[in-house]
Image (cartoon, rainbow, N blue to C red; front, side, top):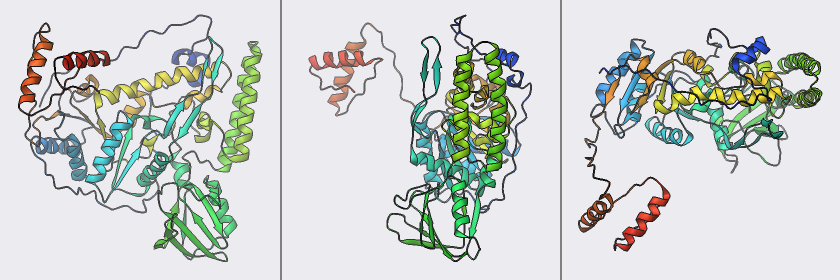
Length: 530
């Protein structure tokens, strides 16, 4: 069904610029440091993926529901568009029309892994629950920001205030992120529900998959070598407190709590240097639940880095540090030079000693080997080539994608300008909108009110889903005069109450709710506000 094309965009608010404080813009930064100039064109990097060890499984919906209303037509049109290799499609569906079930049916019909983008964690959690119920036999995963609390590192030159990064990581969400990346690398029947924060960098998929190793029954490996391999993947030995991301040693037995498991762990029994058996067990009760022939161990961190890569990265960090210190000293900015040297050398010492440091993501460009200005690895590099992307509530999600880079850039540029970070920290950033647009596979934008970008991509064409499966229609809307609105409300509420029903009244502010509640109470109506 057609729709008139609309052109539109989002205007940026003017910035208040203090002439005494250096302000970085993408253009100015490119002139100051040419390596940071925006790339004229962007070609998405497609890293090679390992062969899937658990592939071949089909995506199958388990549900008593069948498509009804406008759902069958919308499913048929969108599946046809996918098969005809249309890159962009729009599903316009009113609230309550079953858009989530339509998406699930499209995934089942095409048998392709899918990424569902949601504008916030709350909606992502709701979608995750629904898709998990639709696909109980498949890998339905949840990938959102794992911070319960997060204050980004920042510097306010006007008041000379440095704000150190503070964060609290949610262990459960971190586990689910590991489960999501592992499923994408090992299975075909995968549906990942993610918030738009997935355009921020995570570890390089090549390193993440290359450093994973298999443990097979009957294989020969010295125990010390096995423990060293686990430490290299950021697992910690903890014989007393056995939690996710740790391992413990009991004689000839090594017990490992993998990063992606919630209530299962592996017990690896050795006889000398030979792996005698591998068992899956419950970490709480110790009860064995399965005998395994082989397991594959993935890193406990997405930022895992092999020793040679780390050493090479440190050399490049030192080279850039020398250049930046020379610039500060030449400009007479000795405080910034001293600050940058002290902070960077401390980070280098920590990386060489432990393999990581606080704020290691600011050195991601060196660790991944990317060129200046190139985007860092994101979840989109983990997606298989045949994946589908559904952008839920696209009129909200897509503007968010476009706005994330600008806010992040201004904060990082200030840190670099005043010697708190090397300028390379700017490359630890979310994707630009143009980069996301180039990286995404076939996409279906889902919304009751599609935005101008979505409609422009499809030349105003969309699949419509207006008739609900339940057959319910929107209630009639009656507009009353403002002068008598309260009196009309009182009369209608009393009429509804006489029939044994309740009334929900919505107002604009909390104060209005309090005042209206007080007035209705004076009129003898049983009323509460929330």
